[in-house]
Length: 84
Image (cartoon, rainbow, N blue to C red):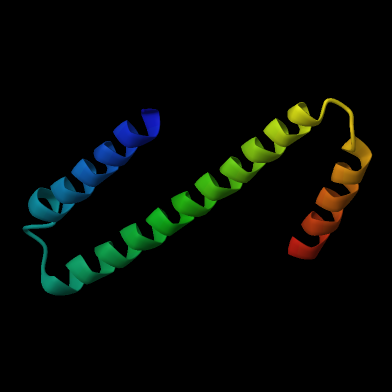
């Protein structure tokens, strides 16, 4: 439910920016602002995805209850070293 509320809030803020805040700007300034806002939105989504992956990994570890824990840690370390 919190995610849906957050998405609705983000959509509302985007429409407000487009219809109210940027209505007075010239075309060139609007393009620049939209590009910066888009880049910022992509950055936020990357952070959100990384945090979600961390949350999933923690839940997986808790579900293992010690069985296969070392193997999971080794696989996770290999995957993280490939990403870096």
